[in-house]
Figure 1 (cartoon, one colour):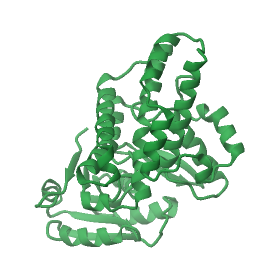
Figure 2 (figure 1 turned 135 degrees about the vertical axis):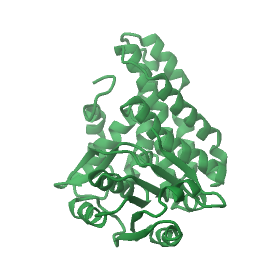
Figure 3 (figure 1 turned 180 degrees about the vertical axis):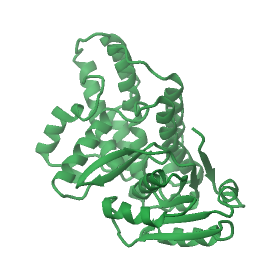
Figure 4 (figure 1 turned 120 degrees about the vertical axis):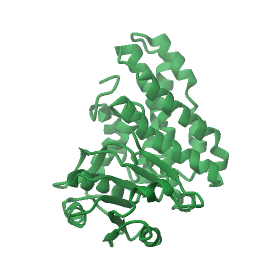
Length: 344
């Protein structure tokens, strides 16, 4: 996947600026990212031939039909669509640029999720969450000062999304052992190294040091690259994500505010590790059990993961994010049905 992942330097983003030189660019942003968009638009005007804007006054932008149509109309006749934001705005930019047949990019405003360079766009259609297949962005622009100063709960969510790679990679290995599911070694290695680098930088991340924040951001971007390499979500999404998706649908069905994806993934990771420990401690028998026990021994303990999440300011109990006891019980029983997994 040919994506320009560019960190800001003294010249700004020279590769990107050269790419959009003389072109018509539309910028999507909302009330939360407006101050960054306003500053960046001033710089864009020094390079682009024309810059237009699509502004959303929403504090919690919902990517529904009306919002997407507004972006689609704003992108008429442009050569490039740029989002200034994170999850929702990035997904909308990928969606509208795919429909218009032009490239897109994002000025990331938070290290909050791993979908920056994915080929999926999570949208709302008919009141239901759908994921459309879209093209990947051509540029991911990262200004560490912006990312480092994002609301801390967003960085906590990004960390939660990455710590979930412990269980998703274990799930993949288990599926290989139990069911013979193939493993894309390159994609696996990409994600495994990015996870290790991020964990090595944890102490610095709790202090929001530039280098550590860059390691987290790199891990989030790498998740998308590894999924693209693999052709599916296996390198970045496992049982912890199944729990998150199940709960998200429940929140939507109830018409309630949906907690950040990475927060749900983080708590789901604690649940998945606990279930893995149960399998090992109770010597649950199944094909390849002894090899799976070895995998379980390599997982961090629930206590260690919980401690790291707490230091990042991340909730560690589902009740803290508004999940009802009966919903959690139903999730434990049914989350595996959301998408295929090793035990599906």
